[in-house]
Image (cartoon, rainbow, N blue to C red; front, side, top):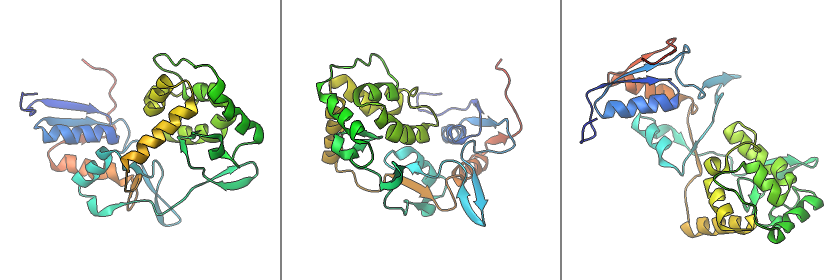
Length: 254
């Protein structure tokens, strides 16, 4: 790579999921010659468009986080600007304690700022356990801690099992009791380091978000499915002279 950010070298990208394709797209912009090697017979990785009863749907992730610029910008760069769509659903619900209840507000990835925020979702014992947070001594987090472990220690397992696990586990396809808080919910990790009380930290996060007055949709979809994004990026890579080889597993580097 030269001082001007351009390169005439040859870059080999391993994997034609959306991350690999995005890397290839950026390298081509900087003047490199690019080859993408993909072990499977198709590009796209976890982003996969499909069809159910004649309707195009996503068989993987169905939306992008709109309040971070990277994915939406990439979609625009590869010609999908006019197909970007915010979700049409205005509200969400949770099945708990034998009924479908509105998804509570006033929480950060399921972690509440007050016990009242989860009224109706948690049992009376669960709500009372949240109230104990303010009186508990500080829970040290060190360099990192599992989200579920920390939240359960502060607010009880019911909060984790009924809200944090379904929300966080669904996003990261993992166990909340093993997912890194520093990596997955960094704002919560910083709050845990700054405050002895977790609920106090969550309220501070909420106050900062309100002061920032963020507008626009939180998520963004693509007409035809988010699974069309890697296909469009692959088409752009090929159009710029990049090579994509499928059924080409990489077994070693030399």
